[in-house]
Image 1: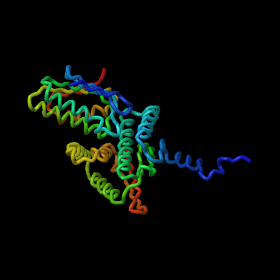
Image 2 (image 1 turned 90 degrees about the vertical axis):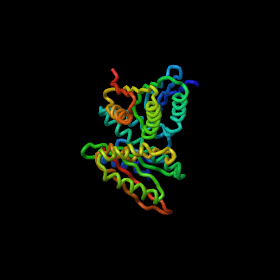
Image 3 (image 1 turned 90 degrees about the horizontal axis):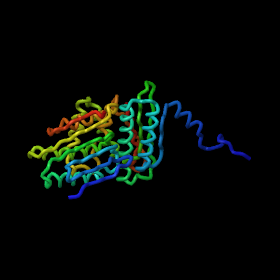
Image 4 (image 1 turned 60 degrees about the vertical axis):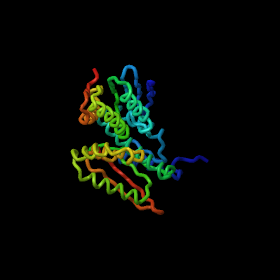
Amino acid sequence: MDNLVIDQSPSSPAIMADWNAGVIRMKGDSYPENSFELFQPLIDWVEAYLAKAGRPLQLELELVYLNTSSIRSMMDIFDQMESAHKKGQTVSARWIYEAANERVGQLAEEFCEDCSFPFSIEVKR
Amino acid sequence: MTTTLQDSPIDLLAIREIFNRQNIMLCFNGPVTAPLIEEIGAALRKHMEGLQESPSAVSDVFSVYIEMAQNIRRYAQGQAFENDASTILISRDESSHYVISASNIVHHNDGQALVERIQQLAHLDKEALKAAFKTQLRQPRSTLSGSAGLGLIDMARKAAAPLQYFLQTLDNGRALFSLRVIL
C-alpha cells in the first residue's frame, strides 16, 4: 500500500500517512467546505492499514482549528482506531498544541474521553 | 459639472454611520462562495489578533462565523438559492460581547424547522448541549446529507446566551431566516 500525502492549504491540514512507519501526521487548520471528501482517502487508508499492515499505528496531531464536519471526520478515525484497539491491535494518538490555544486542548480532551487506547495531549514547548 | 458623493442614490455616509453606531467590525452582503468564506475568515482572524484579543476569543468568533457561513452556503447550494444575497455581520454589543449575526433566504418550512431546533437547544444547559453534541457526532453517516448536523449545537455551546432567531415571511413560500449568536 502507498503512503498518503495531502498538501496543506489555508483551510485544510497537511496530511502524511506513512505505511512502513505506521505513522499518520496531521498539521494545521481544518475547515474546508467539503471535509467529508477531504478526509475520505485518509479514512480508507486507515481501514486498509488496520486490516493488512499487522503493525502498530501512531497518530501524531498538530491540528489547530477544526470546523464541525472536520471534528466528525476525526471522530470517525478515532473510532476506527478504538475498534482496532478492542481487537488487541496497538494504536496510539498524540495531540500537541500551543498553550495559548486553550480551545484546541479542550477539543482534544473531548475526543480523548471517548477513546480507551493511549491518547496523550501535550502542550508544545 | 461635478458629481459629489451626496448626489449618489446610495448614501454611503449613512451606511457608515449605522456601522459605527452598531459597532459593526465586519459586514458582508451578497451571494456567499467558498473562497469568500475563507478570505473573510482570514481577515477576521487577523483583525482580532490586531486587537490583542485572547486566542480563545479569536477562535470562538472565527468558529461561529465559519459554522454559520458554511451552513448558509451548503443550504443555498442544495436549494438553488446560490445567487441570493446573504448577510453576515460581526459586531460588539454595549457590554463588549462579540455578536455574530447572519440572515439568508430559506423555504418557509425549512425556516420553521430551524426555529424549532433552536428552541429545543435553548432549553439545554452546557452539560446537556455537550451530550447532544456527542449524540449527533455518532449519527450514522448514512443519515447525514453531507453535513455533520453539528453546527447549531456547537454555536449554542459557545454562546453566552440562547441563540436568537427571526423568521420573516416573504413571497412564494420563502422566508428570511436570521440568527444571532452572542459570545
